[in-house]
Length: 622
Image 1 (tube, rainbow, N blue to C red):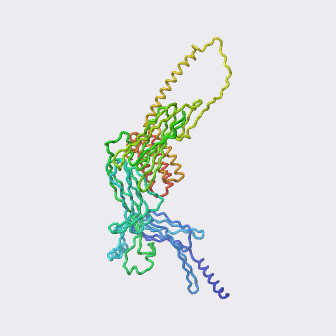
Image 2: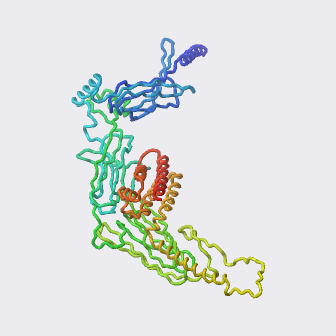
Image 3: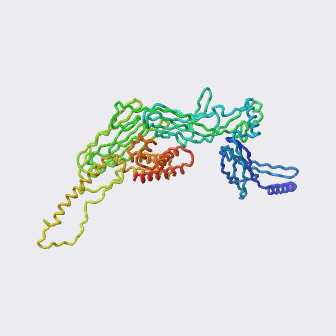
C-alpha cells in the first residue's frame, strides 16, 4: 500500500501542475478567400472547458447551421510526464452573399468565470469569375471526379422542388377553390423557411394549415422515382372578381443534404461513413442551400349567370341553408325580444352581409350582433354565421315578422336557390302600472335595463297665495302655455321625421357607425393580442380593416379589393401616402398571419398599424 501511495501521489502532483500550467486559448479560424455563393466553415476552439458561448453577428454571410458544439479530451504519460489536453469547438457553416472584404467580429466565452474573446477575422469574398488558382484546381479536380462517376452535382437533378396545385381552375365568382403547396424531395432536408408568400390579388383567402402541427408526409412516384411529399401550406380562396387571375409563386428556402456517389472501393474505406450524416464527420455528405419556387397558377373566374338571378342576391355562393329563431311571441310593452338568423353550410360564409329585415314600425330594432362559427378543415371552409337582432315593442297589439328571404348560388347544381324563414306572430300586451323608461347597452336581452319607478316621491313645497281678483285666464302665461305646446309638438315631429329618415337610410347608418364598429373589433383584437391567440387576433384585425372600408364607403364586401380600396380613398381626397400606408397595413396583416418568426412582436406591430391608419383616415375625411 505504501509503495502504491508513493507512486500515486507524485503522479497526481504532476497531473495538477500540468493542468495549472496549461494556458487557456480561445481561437478562431476560417478560410481567407471564398467565392460568392460558396459555403465554408468557421471554427472557434477553446483548449479548456467553457460556458456561455456567444457567437458574432455575420455581415455579408448567411448562417446555414451553427453553432454546432463538440468537445474532446486527451491524457498522455510519456517518460513519467503526464499531459492533459481539453478541446471545445463551436462550428458554423456559412455562405458568402456578396463581394467585398468583410470582418467577422470576435466571439466570447467564459472559463472559470473569466471572459475570453477570440480574434476577429478578415474574409475576402470574390465573384465567381475571379477564382484563384487553388480554387480553379479544386473545381477542375471536382469536375474530373464527376466525369469519373465519383460525384453527382445536386443541381443537375430535380431532387427537391416545390409544386402548387389547384382543385379547380375555372370557378364561379365567389366559389371556393383550394390551392395546395407541396414539397417533393428525394434527399433529407431541414431548416425550411418561407421567403415569399404567394399574393392572392383578386381573392379573399383563408389559411387551412394548422401552424402547430408537424408536416404531413406521404410518398409519390414521378417517372418511376420515389419522392417524399410534405404539405407545406393549403389555402382556401374565394375569387372576388371575374376574368383571368394569377396566383404568384411561393418561394421557400431549405438545406438539402446531398450524398456523393462513390466507387465501391472508396465506400469500403471506413465503416463510419454511413453512420455520420453530419458533413463535419463524413466527407461523402455535404449540405446545399436550396431556394425553391413554385410555378404561377392561372385561374379563369366565370361570372355568375344572369338568367334567373334574383334582385336581392347578395353574393352568397356555396352549399348553404338558413334558419331563424325567436325566444318569445307573447310579451308586454318594453320587454325585449331576441330574433336570430343563422346561415350555415360550406362556402363564402364570412362574406355574407347582414339581412334587410323589415320589422314592424312599432318595434325598436338595433343593429345585429354577428357571430361567426367557422370550421377550417383540409376540405375547405364551412360553419355558420349568426345575426342576432334585439327588438323592443313600444305599443301593444298583434304584429307580424314577415319571412326573411335568403338567396344563394349553388355551384353543384349551377343555379340560384331561395330559402325562407318562418312567419312569426307576436302578441304585445300593455304593461302593468306606469310605463318605465328603457335604456339599451348591447344586443343581449340582459343588457336592457329599466330605470325609474312606479312611485314618485312628493316634494313638499310652501303654499303659494294668489292676489285677490287675479285670474290666470287671459294672462300672458295663459297664452304662452297655449302656444308653447304647439311649437314643441312641431319641433318633436320634425325631429322624429329626421330621425326616422336617418334610421331608414341603411347606408348612412353604416357610414356613421363605421369607425365605432372598427374600434370595437380592434378592442377584441387587443384582448386576443394580450392572450397571444394568433388566429382570432388576425380575424378581428381583418374584420376591422375590411369592415371599416365596406361601411364607410358603401362597398359590398364581395367587391372589396386593393384597387377598389385605393379608388374609394382617392375619391374622398385622402392623401396618396395615407392610401399606400393603408394598403401596406392590409398586406402586412395577410403576410404576418403565415410568416414565421416572433408572433407576439408581429401581432403588436400589426395592431398599432391598424389603429393608427384608421384614425389617420378619419382625420383626413373631416
